[in-house]
Image 1 (cartoon, rainbow, N blue to C red):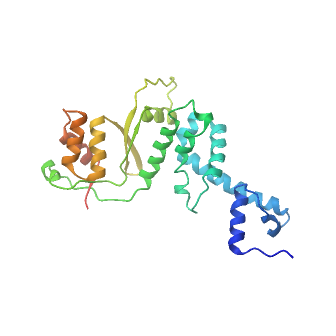
Image 2 (image 1 turned 30 degrees about the vertical axis):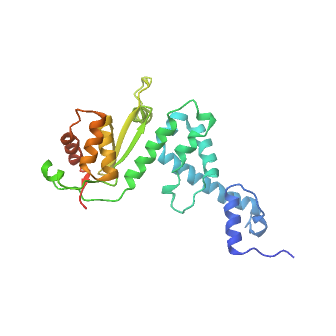
Image 3 (image 1 turned 60 degrees about the vertical axis):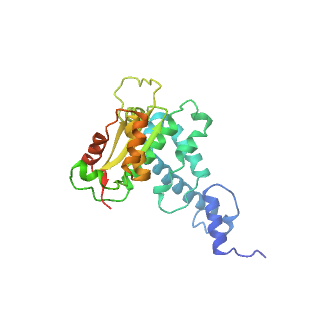
Length: 249
């Protein structure tokens, strides 16, 4: 006599079936005009399609760079290695950049994982919490405060011109992309309903990164000056204020 599985065993069996891990769940499935295996395949196909569409929406530049067929194959492989642990798919693509770095088929595109990481940070900026920008004030007033930066502000440093590649992939102008071997350091933040991005010089990048970590202006200033002795802290702060990236609290 076969013992009926518990609810937890059924749930685990269903998850295994959705990820093509085998199992004997089919014997407990009512096919309703389909075989039990075919009924399970309907659900498996629907879940796979939804997850692939989620990755397509998150990584349009990566998709444009590698082509639809390659991207779909990579997405199918990714979902089996990194199954979603939540019903909300907003976190589903978080390991995609690292996964691309392990794919031998993508090895010729050394910049691809960094482009993917840029796109992931775009999503994080879009979904970040709200915060009230600091009211327009003099720089002297700002300098007296611990500096808190907007939660949507993210930074990425890459050995590749990642922002240039992203812009080319999402809005190609016909001319072949020419890479000069130089990397880029990029800031991303939410500007209204859009995500803004800008390449930064090394000293400004270091200053902002240090502010994110410490909120201490003196520490950030010293770190930036170590990169560039001519660094102007006031210019950097004015830019952050202009973009409403210094916030209260």
